[in-house]
Length: 268
Image 1 (cartoon, rainbow, N blue to C red):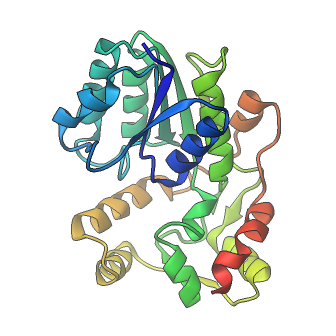
Image 2 (cartoon, one colour):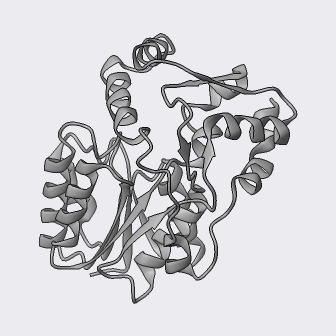
């Protein structure tokens, strides 16, 4: 067995950061992304798991989407059979299906850690919300609900600690930022940091889905996101958690710090 870590979703927001941090410490990283790895094709699992000691698992598009549980179970089974000794799963906060996926990984019989996350701050600067931010209007079916937005750098720091250090096996780290914010407040902070006017527009789920499809999002993905938002943007996440401090011994980064760092992205 080598000291290679497989990073699934290595091109994603957290996967990219995890891979960069691991490489910076001199560890061997195997990138798990298409075409070498495809969640929808279980034949691609075994080759990327060969000679791997640890795996960072992120599921695309989300653990709440149809088929996710079966694929997580298949990957976990193959990882254990291949001799992988440590698994770290990125999960969603207060998502029923995500927490069922957590149990699959935690019960696998190897060292396993769950990194349970709230809404990423970086969705506004690196993901599908960047174009709406640049257009000046972020439209979501979130009403006035507040979120404890979490920095993807914090997620990566916790994941790397769990992948490389002792003492994290069996832990479920629930990660949030240090304060609750509405999407309107997030838009205001983006405006202040970037110098451009950005507003939040609450829309109905049907309006959101139609807008997403018009912007090029596949219809099944748009409706899947709608279902996810209906589940997690209902106020269930309007609380703070202490997972960053538990794992790293420091407080989580604040949205203002993130916005200042991301400001140049919004100044195009």
